[in-house]
Length: 126
Image (cartoon, rainbow, N blue to C red; front, side):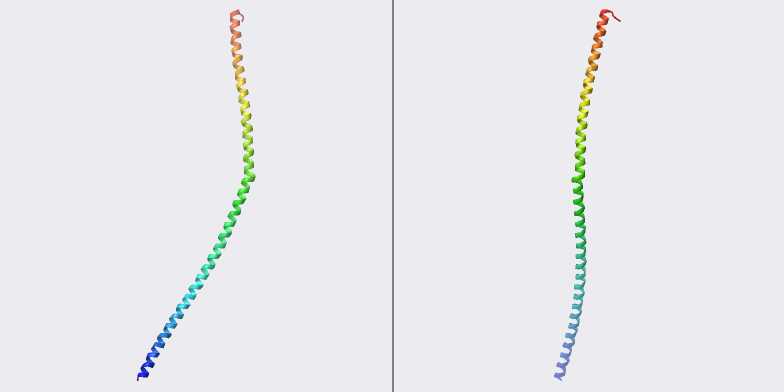
């Protein structure tokens, strides 16, 4: 009877071991599935990183093109505008000097006219 009990216990232990093995196999399968999912997520992240790298490269290229345009075209045009501004300022200074001379001459002429009128009045002419 003892042998039967031992055999029954051994059978139970074997069944428990089999159940544990089945559970372990299920856990291993779940772990494998999780690893596969993690691998897929890692691949997606790698693809996203590659796309981000491409976008960054394009942005850098655009920035460099903009900088070259700024340096070559816009800076040159700003220099031309600055030179034109200086030229206009010189012309304005010349015009203002001429205007001041013209106003001074008008004042001198007015003064001379007044003097002539005084002389005429003093001599009783006209």
